[in-house]
Length: 507
Image 1: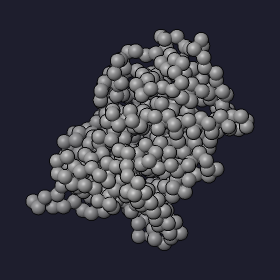
Image 2: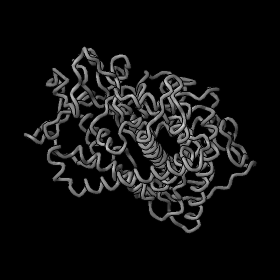
Image 3: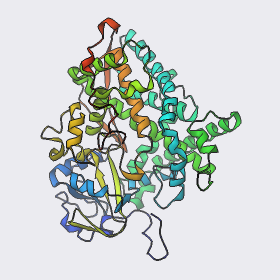
Image 4: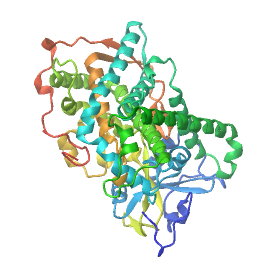
């Protein structure tokens, strides 16, 4: 949203809710507020999203929280969230946690402010990199990386060891985006420990979240050591990407995302991305392009291990659709309708990007009841939107992939399933992530029986994104032969087109 000379500019930096919500007092907040500190009693600074979920259940579809003098408004009711999805009245807001990543990601696609021109430029230049033609070209590399994962899991199985699901999914998704998008091999599966890039990335995400939990004026004192480590992490991320770009410029390209960033001009204006912005976009893709997908896969594998009847149904579909083909073709992945439902249901319960912020383009009234001034913003709490009993039923906390069968999807209102954000600033790589994750789930179901640890209880770690903590699974190798394939009726042929769980075919 570009500013004009006829309007007062929006205030810079963080804008508390008291600046934009004239009737803020009408919005409920947790009891027992503490002067200066705010709503801090009974909360854990490591789990702010899960704390907000608890407050939301108590306070209703719109509520507020206060921390160190700053007031935040949260929305999760389906009608209010749908109102905020109206692109004519609302736009993306770069919220506090996301803004804390700007020292490393700058005006990259995820962290750019709406008025910064590089967002639209990068979006228009890079969007063709996620076309069907481009996705088909990525498919063989996705298969190759998945082969490294299954080789690793075969070795763990032979040694009688359980597998580290979040750690291995992180290796998988980092290698996938690095190789398909940037022609780079981090060698993740040849390492006993995470690649230093992953450690630096986790450090920056964790630091960004910690900044939300301390008073801004005191951060330099309270987080002195953490700030130094964060600066070192940012320097490592920058140097890694700079080396990657130098190598590409020296060797020439092969038509991937990095080539588009370096060589493609905007089709209308002829503009190109600057060297600094290329670095920021590469970091954005490497971080966002693997962190959320690894979480989605990890949660899906957790639920498959806990629901063997669902895993059996998904496995039967894989057998029927892929048959005895050694590896699946690109089009065969989209035909895994039920496997995709498993993934969508995992993303419903644990959207790995658990919230997104929206700001008012002009003075407006949210839901016909809550006045908002231009620039006022709220955080849409996807975690609770996806568990709203009025939308998802009384069993909204349960895991049921059939919530995403075509009939159920058609019966739900739009804007009730938002794992990739909303509007023009929604995740540009969502089709990449969904194809990769569906492919990997199909390959793992085809190869293994997944056995849960009966003593494990799901614990979710937060670092702006969500990930199951300490999740390990035992594997049993499964022999698949043409004679043992599941019946064809296991395949859901209700639709001949891949269906978006929010809108419909082709969306």
